[in-house]
Image (cartoon, rainbow, N blue to C red):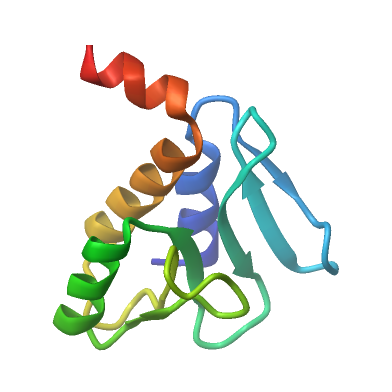
Length: 114
């Protein structure tokens, strides 16, 4: 997964925006309600992305994948950092981005359940 593919996956979430509140090159992707669901630094090698995640699922992911760690500079209970192009398939990363978006947009989750 390239930076462009990662960025596209984040921006394809309905109404999502890319902001740079911390520094140039540190992309923060936000849902329409202003809550962030993904963070990635465009200039790091290797590329990584931090996403919000259910704590139980996060624990399982860290156990199953070497490329999944506790969220870097984020709440370690609710955020994970994933390194693409390691042992996590690209489609799984896209799923984690969608899940993170859903976690910060409760109305969207309620519509999906109905």
